[in-house]
Amino acid sequence: MQSSTIITDEFLNEYPIMITIPEDNKTYYCKEELVNQSTPPYSKLVSSENSVAIVLSPGYGSEWSAGYSKSAAQLVFDSRLIKYVASEEFATRFYNKYYDLSEEDKDFYNNLMKEWFPSIASPYIGGFVNLVVEFIPKNSVFRIVSYDGAESIEYYNPNKYLTA
Image (tube, rainbow, N blue to C red; front, side):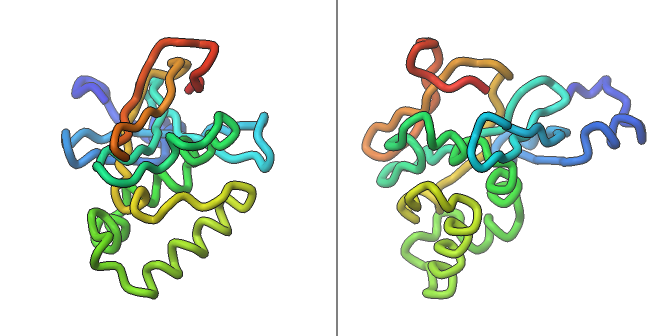
């Protein structure tokens, strides 16, 4: 959000969800947008700057979504997951804590995956603990690629990539 934007009640009604990215200390004001072409439908987060929130796992060792087909796009866009990854609970309970996870944490993860992604085989928990939120321009054509488990965004080929 540009510093010149005045935040009014009307603006906050339209973009009620705040996501702060700690790495660059930037706050995005977002709204949920339903993705109808999926079964079951889910929502993605669109910012006031016309960008879309995604999650990926940039840490080496375990990918999150790169090994899935385009049909598993929900793993990248789902607003529930994005809000959770941006939360203080995720930061203190899971982020970069693969070797320190309790059985309770692992059970929580497994139950979350079954509840939110019942038709997708659960990704490896090692990718989950490295998730970060990034914003990309809406309608960008991209895919998530992985090298030694570290995911990154690759833009370009509209025949193979997802659209935000």
